[in-house]
Image 1: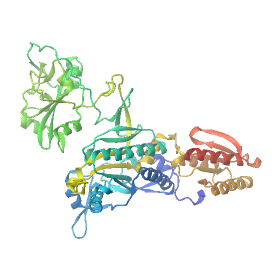
Image 2: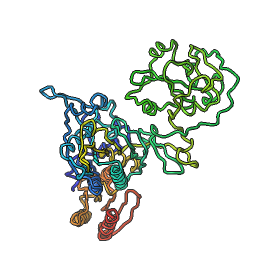
Image 3: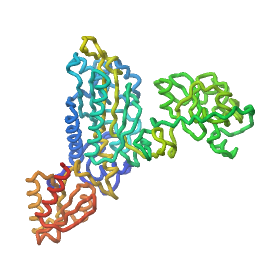
Image 4: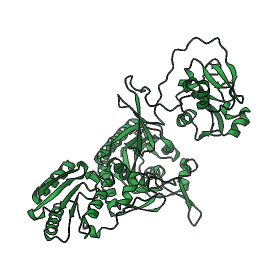
Amino acid sequence: MLQSRLFGTTLRETPSEAEAISHQLMLRAGLIRQLAAGIYTYLPLGRRVLRKVESIVREEMEAAGAQEVLMPALQPGDLWKESGRYEVYGPELMRLQDRHEREFVLGPTHEEVVTKLVREEINTYRRLPVILYQIQTKFRDERRPRFGLLRGREFLMKDAYSFDSDWDSLDRSYRRMFEAYKRIFQRCGIAFRAVEADAGSIGGEGGTHEFMALADIGEDTVVVCTHCDYAANLEKAEAIADVKEKAQPSQIQAEKFHTPELKTIEQLAEALDIPPSQLMKTLIYLADGELVAVVVRGDHEVNELKVMNALSAAEIELAGADAVHAALGHSIGSIGPIGLPFKLLVDYGAASMPDGIAGANEDDFHLRHVQPGRDFPLEHVGDYRNVLEGEGCPRCEEGKLKFHRGIELGHVFKLGTKYSEKLSANYLDACGKSQPFIMGCYGIGISRILSAVIEQHHDEGSILWPMSIAPYQVHIVPVSMKDEEQLMLARGLYDSLTKQGVEVLLDDRDERPGIKFKDSDLMGIPLRLIVGKHAGQGQVEYVVRSRHEKLVVSQSQAEARILSDLREIEE
């Protein structure tokens, strides 16, 4: 490709709306342009990277036995109502009506559509298992699109769905997809961790894992063990059941003391000159419209997802001041676990305290020497909190938990019969009995991979593409297009490499050298051949961008090195 004909321009200044380095560099390098918030056009350079990622995904999906289909992005609302997700999915679901006032949605995912497809195509166990996948544009009405391609309203996704006759077969399908995902991210040059996760709005009856690219800009917290291979999303990470041998009950009864204007754990700990771990924190939630209390140690934070799962609730939120006052007759700042008129969930950490300080359920008062089990019931004890960095691993005795930031790139689920039962998707087993399909689903954010790779592969002001997904493999940069020797050597290299199947971009623009090198840095092409002062001797500067290596070689040596480097990547 001749750079003079390349559609798109580089930007000298960083656009003000771009916060993440990946967003900044994709805009400046001419890979994408914003049409509206969270909606982007891919320019030729960006589209070439996207197609290479798609190619890797297709190769690994096919190798894992999946077959490609393409399903409609526009889906009937009735199908989502049949599965029960039309109302519960949330405001991220883009809803619309056609001219006949029939309801449709723009698909954020395709569980309903693929389940309907398979129930109409497969009716016997003899045709199972089957895995179908597609690469398609998805839509989610994000409240706050940000970070470029990392959180958009329109994005490219690979979603796959497996249909099996039993759970053992699903386990095999799940493992094939899990291993395929590992190969995909490795081939794209991404440092990642597969972590235990929650199924969220997709739901399901079995395990689920997220594939996280480790990056400071990531919106998820990844919890990993320093000793074993345990890894989980923070919302899923397990806290050790710290149930110590209970001390003999204290003879000291709980006593009330005055705490005017002390409304928070921090204020109370400072005023009493004690660590927050000696305090009990009681929070009131609305779970599907019903009030419930959760008690954790003062230095711990409630994990609302764990609470929601423990209650089998569809929705959960902190109760407001008015709701608390109506139910208890006092303000939020004095809530305690004693005598509450609704269900009380007690975290392991709070349950194991010998005694502590808690709210007195009376404005401006707290209680000393509150004992779990004596002063309030321990009927619902469990893991209801976020883990803390540095605490022990739930899987091994030697390890400690360490936190990283992560970008979610992929998610694999064991759905079980969640959708097949609701959508009456059944097959006949070997005995002729009708059975629901056992399903799994597997998603990868294709467009997100571009951002994740750049977050991990860049230096100051430039992209450093891995060879496997770079828009071009080699960038030939003649210093002066007016120098006949440079021009002849550059075109000779371009023609020879192109004939050998190498993807080459030739900067044939009549620009100053500084502009050419700056643009080349921004684009991040892995190998650069600078045709300059050595052209008279038939030599070029051979630059390996990722290693900042630079050496002078002949034309034949340059071609041989390039072909050798490309063979190593392919192998």
